[in-house]
Image: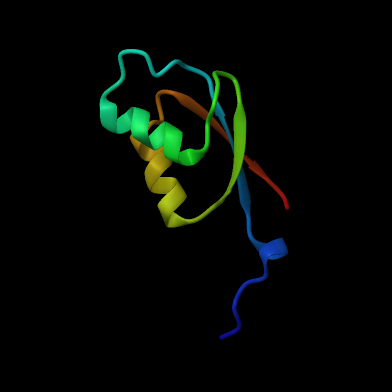
Length: 69
C-alpha cells in the first residue's frame, strides 16, 4: 500500500479560545506541545490519532475546524 502524500492529508485548524490559567499542569503542557503561544492563536496540525488525543485532553480550551489542504 502506498504512503499518503502530505497534500492528501486532512488538516485541522485549532484555536486556543480559553486561558490555561488555573488548568491542570498536564493540560498546560499539552497546549504548549501543540504550539500555542498566546490566547486566540491558531495552529494547523494533521488529522491523526495523536492530534485527536491531544484535542480530547484540552477540548474545553480550544475550537477545532477541519480544513481542506
